[in-house]
Image (cartoon, rainbow over all chains, first blue to last red; front, side, top):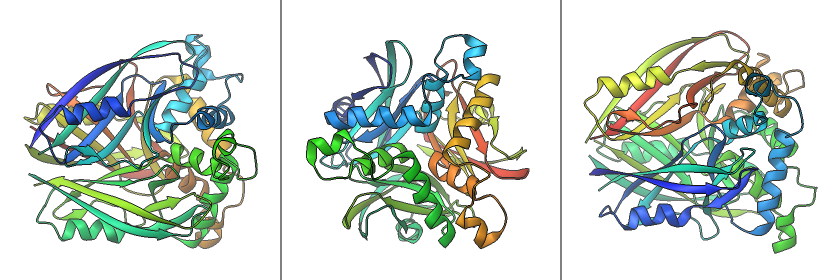
Amino acid sequence: MSVITEFIPVATRGYTDIIDITQNVSDVIKNSSLKNGIATIFVSGSTAGITTIEYESGLLEDLPQAFEKFAPMNIQYHHDRTWSDGNGYAHVRAALLGASFTVPFKDNKMILGTWQQIVLIDFDNRPRKRELVVQIIGE
Amino acid sequence: MSVITEFIPVATRGYTDIIDITQNVSDVIKNSSLKNGIATIFVSGSTAGITTIEYESGLLEDLPQAFEKFAPMNIQYHHDRTWSDGNGYAHVRAALLGASFTVPFKDNKMILGTWQQIVLIDFDNRPRKRELVVQIIGE
Amino acid sequence: MSVITEFIPVATRGYTDIIDITQNVSDVIKNSSLKNGIATIFVSGSTAGITTIEYESGLLEDLPQAFEKFAPMNIQYHHDRTWSDGNGYAHVRAALLGASFTVPFKDNKMILGTWQQIVLIDFDNRPRKRELVVQIIGE
């Protein structure tokens, strides 16, 4: 049993940009000698999150619209009174989505559905350079 | 320390069907020789998710109503233009809820509250045969 | 590789009270001899959840307002017909947020962003004594 921790830089455009990171996670597992275990995918920062979706163009429009309804960009946030950086909406969305995701792997391969990709969603109101953490524990 | 990965078939009715899977997870832990560790519960597919609730009839109505507000069934989704399968709402709800859940166990028993059950929620617009993955890592 | 499980009592005021528990998690890791691994933070009970935010006064107002929109306190819930305890909204919010959070650590230190704190959010409609579970697995 061992632990492998990799840091992967990801450039985003912000504004609820949705980026398919499945291959990045898959590579960390493949490049390891671990057969079975758990992968934790974590994004540093409080205006981005991780989840899974079917990565197709329709949902890349639908999901931002749903988040816009939950935490609209154009309303007042107390956060923006503190920092004046105008990204209060991004913090609220990210807190709800969560910065972390875990997925099991078996026989050196992630157990994902065929139409299920792992995505980083960057809610911030500017392009960002994110550091993705992929940590695998297994044997 | 070792890793055990079990696949559990679960039949659902779809339409935000909420199914108590606590016993399934509990059985995997009990049938193992592991005393302490973490259980990861994962659902393959992009129209279902995992969380915990108090499993009682009132909440089985309240939770679908809240999801209906967040991502209504009867509005237009770009996803449905792509596939015409009418389950865009299900994808959006599942992405928000998350396909994965982790819970610690100690002395061969999950650490859950008395009124806290682990549930699979299937948002899809038809009955589905889901494959639940329960992976435990521990000693 | 070993597993350490700690139980940490946390008193809350309820009503979507947001409590910074970063130091509690950090202490469990520091007090262990583990260098690299994963920390699972779990809250027993079905009316509270765990996530990360930038812990500043503005967001401590914004986040409850967003949850109020998603699952308002003053509407009717079927749950309240069952138990008459008036906290149906709290169950719905907690199910959405999730009772569990995982974060990797490396060199005996959590990998968190500078402005990213781990928080317990208690949605219940009264002060509660919560039991936080922090479990670390690593080497």
